[in-house]
Length: 106
Length: 106
Image (cartoon, rainbow over all chains, first blue to last red; front, side):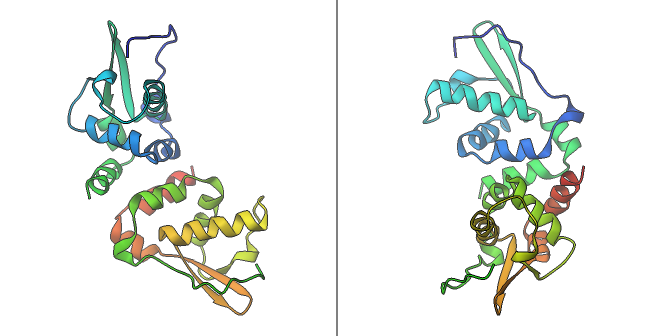
Protein backbone atom coordinates (compact mmCIF):
# COMPACT_ATOMS: atom_id res chain seq x y z
CA UNK A 1 0.00 0.00 0.00
CA UNK A 2 1.65 3.19 -1.14
CA UNK A 3 -0.18 5.83 0.87
CA UNK A 4 1.17 6.45 4.33
CA UNK A 5 -0.05 8.53 7.19
CA UNK A 6 2.44 10.28 9.41
CA UNK A 7 1.02 8.66 12.54
CA UNK A 8 3.36 6.26 14.27
CA UNK A 9 2.65 2.56 14.20
CA UNK A 10 1.49 1.80 17.72
CA UNK A 11 1.85 -1.72 19.09
CA UNK A 12 0.79 -2.99 22.50
CA UNK A 13 3.67 -4.28 24.59
CA UNK A 14 3.72 -8.03 25.03
CA UNK A 15 2.37 -7.68 28.58
CA UNK A 16 -0.46 -5.45 27.40
CA UNK A 17 -1.81 -7.78 24.73
CA UNK A 18 -5.47 -8.33 25.55
CA UNK A 19 -6.73 -11.84 24.94
CA UNK A 20 -10.20 -10.71 23.91
CA UNK A 21 -8.81 -8.14 21.50
CA UNK A 22 -6.85 -11.00 19.92
CA UNK A 23 -9.95 -13.22 19.90
CA UNK A 24 -11.99 -10.48 18.31
CA UNK A 25 -9.32 -9.79 15.69
CA UNK A 26 -9.33 -13.48 14.74
CA UNK A 27 -13.11 -13.58 14.32
CA UNK A 28 -12.85 -12.27 10.79
CA UNK A 29 -12.02 -14.53 7.85
CA UNK A 30 -9.83 -11.96 6.08
CA UNK A 31 -7.77 -11.29 9.20
CA UNK A 32 -7.51 -15.01 9.88
CA UNK A 33 -6.18 -15.50 6.33
CA UNK A 34 -3.55 -12.85 6.96
CA UNK A 35 -2.49 -14.50 10.23
CA UNK A 36 -2.24 -17.87 8.50
CA UNK A 37 -0.10 -16.40 5.72
CA UNK A 38 2.16 -14.67 8.26
CA UNK A 39 2.68 -17.95 10.07
CA UNK A 40 4.61 -19.08 7.00
CA UNK A 41 6.75 -16.00 6.34
CA UNK A 42 7.94 -12.86 8.10
CA UNK A 43 8.10 -9.26 6.92
CA UNK A 44 5.42 -9.63 4.29
CA UNK A 45 4.40 -6.42 2.52
CA UNK A 46 0.72 -5.48 2.80
CA UNK A 47 0.53 -5.07 -0.96
CA UNK A 48 1.42 -8.70 -1.64
CA UNK A 49 -1.73 -10.11 -0.04
CA UNK A 50 -4.20 -11.11 -2.71
CA UNK A 51 -7.43 -10.90 -0.74
CA UNK A 52 -10.94 -10.13 -2.00
CA UNK A 53 -11.29 -6.81 -0.18
CA UNK A 54 -10.74 -3.17 -1.08
CA UNK A 55 -7.39 -1.61 -0.22
CA UNK A 56 -8.94 0.59 2.45
CA UNK A 57 -10.63 -2.40 4.09
CA UNK A 58 -7.36 -4.32 3.95
CA UNK A 59 -5.55 -1.44 5.66
CA UNK A 60 -8.17 -1.50 8.41
CA UNK A 61 -7.76 -5.26 8.86
CA UNK A 62 -3.98 -4.86 9.22
CA UNK A 63 -4.51 -2.10 11.74
CA UNK A 64 -6.89 -4.24 13.82
CA UNK A 65 -4.31 -7.04 13.77
CA UNK A 66 -1.54 -4.68 14.83
CA UNK A 67 -3.54 -2.96 17.56
CA UNK A 68 -4.65 -6.32 18.98
CA UNK A 69 -1.01 -7.37 19.25
CA UNK A 70 -1.20 -10.17 16.68
CA UNK A 71 1.20 -8.61 14.20
CA UNK A 72 4.10 -6.19 14.15
CA UNK A 73 4.29 -3.67 11.33
CA UNK A 74 7.15 -1.51 10.14
CA UNK A 75 7.54 0.77 7.18
CA UNK A 76 10.36 0.20 4.74
CA UNK A 77 10.27 2.97 2.13
CA UNK A 78 6.84 2.72 0.55
CA UNK A 79 6.25 -0.80 1.81
CA UNK A 80 4.60 -1.72 5.11
CA UNK A 81 5.98 -5.03 6.34
CA UNK A 82 4.05 -7.41 8.57
CA UNK A 83 5.23 -10.10 10.97
CA UNK A 84 3.23 -12.34 13.26
CA UNK A 85 4.21 -11.78 16.92
CA UNK A 86 4.47 -15.52 17.32
CA UNK A 87 6.95 -15.80 20.19
CA UNK A 88 5.26 -13.11 22.26
CA UNK A 89 1.80 -14.57 21.73
CA UNK A 90 3.06 -18.05 22.60
CA UNK A 91 4.47 -16.71 25.84
CA UNK A 92 1.30 -14.82 26.73
CA UNK A 93 -1.22 -17.45 25.65
CA UNK A 94 0.56 -20.81 25.46
CA UNK A 95 -0.88 -23.13 22.85
CA UNK A 96 -3.50 -20.67 21.66
CA UNK A 97 -2.03 -19.70 18.31
CA UNK A 98 -1.23 -23.33 17.53
CA UNK A 99 -4.88 -24.16 18.18
CA UNK A 100 -6.09 -21.29 16.00
CA UNK A 101 -3.82 -22.25 13.11
CA UNK A 102 -4.64 -25.94 13.42
CA UNK A 103 -8.39 -25.28 13.44
CA UNK A 104 -8.10 -22.78 10.58
CA UNK A 105 -6.37 -25.45 8.49
CA UNK A 106 -9.16 -28.02 8.99
CA UNK B 1 -37.78 -16.94 30.33
CA UNK B 2 -41.37 -18.09 30.25
CA UNK B 3 -42.15 -18.00 26.55
CA UNK B 4 -41.18 -21.12 24.64
CA UNK B 5 -41.13 -21.93 20.98
CA UNK B 6 -41.98 -25.42 19.87
CA UNK B 7 -38.74 -25.76 17.92
CA UNK B 8 -36.35 -28.35 19.33
CA UNK B 9 -33.15 -27.22 21.01
CA UNK B 10 -30.45 -28.08 18.50
CA UNK B 11 -26.91 -28.67 19.67
CA UNK B 12 -23.87 -29.48 17.56
CA UNK B 13 -22.32 -32.85 18.37
CA UNK B 14 -19.00 -32.66 20.13
CA UNK B 15 -17.16 -33.52 16.90
CA UNK B 16 -19.04 -30.81 15.00
CA UNK B 17 -18.20 -27.94 17.33
CA UNK B 18 -16.53 -25.29 15.20
CA UNK B 19 -13.66 -23.47 16.84
CA UNK B 20 -14.39 -20.19 15.12
CA UNK B 21 -18.08 -20.34 16.03
CA UNK B 22 -16.93 -20.74 19.64
CA UNK B 23 -14.44 -17.88 19.25
CA UNK B 24 -17.09 -15.66 17.75
CA UNK B 25 -19.58 -16.54 20.51
CA UNK B 26 -17.02 -15.55 23.12
CA UNK B 27 -16.34 -12.17 21.50
CA UNK B 28 -19.30 -10.63 23.25
CA UNK B 29 -19.12 -9.43 26.87
CA UNK B 30 -22.64 -10.61 27.76
CA UNK B 31 -22.02 -14.10 26.42
CA UNK B 32 -18.63 -14.21 28.10
CA UNK B 33 -20.34 -13.31 31.41
CA UNK B 34 -22.77 -16.18 30.93
CA UNK B 35 -19.94 -18.62 30.21
CA UNK B 36 -18.09 -17.46 33.32
CA UNK B 37 -21.20 -17.90 35.46
CA UNK B 38 -21.79 -21.38 34.03
CA UNK B 39 -18.24 -22.39 34.88
CA UNK B 40 -19.31 -22.17 38.52
CA UNK B 41 -22.66 -23.97 38.39
CA UNK B 42 -24.61 -26.34 36.15
CA UNK B 43 -28.25 -26.28 35.04
CA UNK B 44 -28.72 -22.56 35.60
CA UNK B 45 -32.09 -21.17 34.49
CA UNK B 46 -31.95 -18.38 31.89
CA UNK B 47 -34.20 -16.24 34.06
CA UNK B 48 -31.73 -16.14 36.94
CA UNK B 49 -29.07 -14.22 35.01
CA UNK B 50 -29.08 -10.59 36.02
CA UNK B 51 -27.54 -9.01 32.96
CA UNK B 52 -28.08 -5.50 31.55
CA UNK B 53 -29.81 -6.64 28.36
CA UNK B 54 -33.41 -7.06 27.23
CA UNK B 55 -34.97 -10.49 27.56
CA UNK B 56 -35.10 -10.95 23.81
CA UNK B 57 -31.42 -10.07 23.48
CA UNK B 58 -30.59 -12.46 26.29
CA UNK B 59 -32.48 -15.25 24.53
CA UNK B 60 -30.47 -14.57 21.41
CA UNK B 61 -27.20 -14.69 23.36
CA UNK B 62 -28.15 -18.07 24.85
CA UNK B 63 -29.04 -19.35 21.42
CA UNK B 64 -25.68 -18.24 19.99
CA UNK B 65 -23.93 -19.99 22.87
CA UNK B 66 -25.92 -23.17 22.32
CA UNK B 67 -25.52 -23.21 18.55
CA UNK B 68 -21.77 -22.64 18.86
CA UNK B 69 -21.51 -25.69 21.14
CA UNK B 70 -20.48 -23.77 24.25
CA UNK B 71 -23.57 -24.60 26.29
CA UNK B 72 -26.22 -27.28 26.52
CA UNK B 73 -29.80 -26.22 27.12
CA UNK B 74 -32.81 -28.24 28.21
CA UNK B 75 -36.32 -27.23 29.13
CA UNK B 76 -37.71 -28.16 32.52
CA UNK B 77 -41.29 -26.97 32.68
CA UNK B 78 -41.19 -23.25 32.08
CA UNK B 79 -37.50 -22.99 32.86
CA UNK B 80 -34.68 -23.32 30.36
CA UNK B 81 -31.61 -24.72 32.03
CA UNK B 82 -28.06 -24.04 30.86
CA UNK B 83 -24.85 -25.98 31.33
CA UNK B 84 -21.38 -25.29 30.00
CA UNK B 85 -20.17 -28.17 27.79
CA UNK B 86 -16.90 -28.12 29.65
CA UNK B 87 -15.73 -31.72 29.21
CA UNK B 88 -16.53 -31.77 25.51
CA UNK B 89 -14.86 -28.43 24.87
CA UNK B 90 -11.80 -29.51 26.82
CA UNK B 91 -11.53 -32.63 24.68
CA UNK B 92 -11.97 -30.72 21.43
CA UNK B 93 -9.80 -27.69 22.27
CA UNK B 94 -7.50 -28.66 25.15
CA UNK B 95 -6.62 -25.76 27.39
CA UNK B 96 -8.70 -23.25 25.48
CA UNK B 97 -11.55 -22.75 27.93
CA UNK B 98 -9.10 -22.54 30.83
CA UNK B 99 -7.31 -19.77 28.97
CA UNK B 100 -10.56 -17.93 28.22
CA UNK B 101 -11.73 -18.11 31.83
CA UNK B 102 -8.32 -17.14 33.19
CA UNK B 103 -8.08 -14.13 30.89
CA UNK B 104 -11.70 -13.13 31.59
CA UNK B 105 -10.90 -13.10 35.31
CA UNK B 106 -7.91 -10.74 34.93
